[in-house]
Image (cartoon, rainbow, N blue to C red; front, side, top):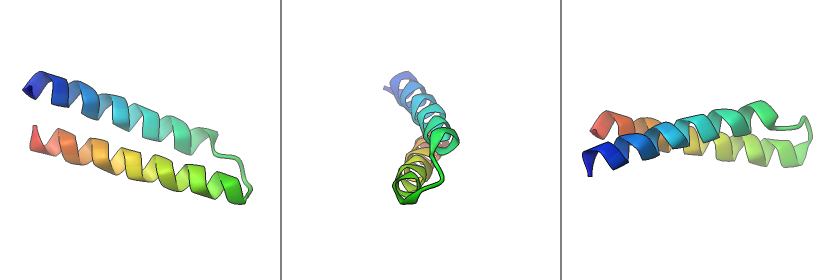
Length: 50
C-alpha cells in the first residue's frame, strides 16, 4: 500500500506539472492550469503522508 501510494503521488505530480506546462494562454487554459495545480497539490499531499 505504501509503495502504491508513492507511485500514485509521483504520477500525480508529473501529470500536474505536464498540465501546467501545456496550458494555453486562453480561458480554457486557465482551467487546465488550475486542474494541474490541484493534481500537483494532491500528489504532494500523498507524498508527505507516505
